[in-house]
View 1 (cartoon, helix red, strand yellow):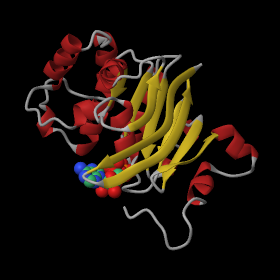
View 2 (cartoon, rainbow, N blue to C red):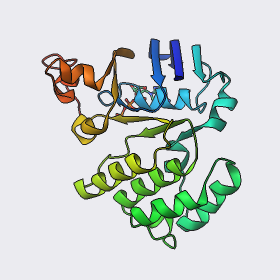
View 3 (tube, rainbow, N blue to C red):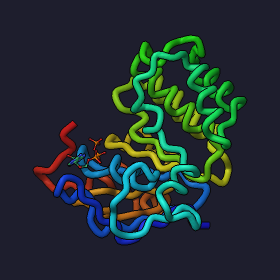
Length: 236
Ligand SMILES: Nc1ncnc2c1ncn2[C@@H]1O[C@H](COP(=O)(O)OP(=O)(O)OP(=O)(O)O)[C@@H](O)[C@H]1O
C-alpha cells in the first residue's frame, strides 16, 4: 500500500529554487533512506511532506490527506522536537507531546527512554549531542503514525549512540509504518534500509529497493556514490 505520494513538487524560497519537479512514492512497512549531499534539499523535502513548509507547487499526499494541516497531524517529524530550545525536563516534554498529539503513546516513550538510557529528569537544553538525538528519535517514535520522518538522526554522534538509535528504530517501528531517514553518510544506515531515494540537482534522481541494488552486485554506498561525479562531493 502506498503511504506517501509526491508528484511534480516544486518549491522556491526567497526567489531561490530549492526543489524542482520532484516525484517520490513510498510504500508501507519500509525503512527508506533519503540520501543526498549537504544542501541537496532533504530537510526541505521533509518539511514540505510534514506540512511545516507550504507555498509549493505539485501534490503531496499521505494516504488521502493532501492539505498541509492534515498532514501535520498524521506524520511524525523529528524537527518538531529538535528545533526547540527547551529548559524543561525530558519527562515534562514527553507529557506535553502526550497532551498535544492524540497518537502519542506514553508507554512507548518510557520504553524507548529506558532502551536509550535517557534520564527523564534531565533538562533538554543540557543534553549531550548524542542524548539530544536519542531523545528526538524517542519522541518521534512514540507517536503511532503511518509515516515517520527522521532528519539526520545520526548527525555528529558516536558509533555506540548510533547503534542504539538504529536498534530502537527497528524495535519500535509500528509494523505497517514507513520511516524515511535522511542522511549523507549512508554507511550509518545501509544495512537497515529497504529502499533508497537519492536527492540531487533539486530533485529525486532515483528511487530503488535495496534488494535490487544488492542483486546488481552493488553495495548501497557504491550505488549512492555513483551519483556523485568526480569533483563533486559531500562537503561535510
Ligand atoms: N530560507 C532559505 N532561503 C533560501 N534558501 C534556503 C533557505 N533554507 C534553505 N535554503 C537552501 O535550500 C537548499 C536545501 O537545504 P536543505 O537544508 O533542505 O538541504 P539538506 O539536504 O537537508 O542539507 P544538510 O544535509 O546539510 O542538512 C540549500 O541550498 C539551502 O541553502
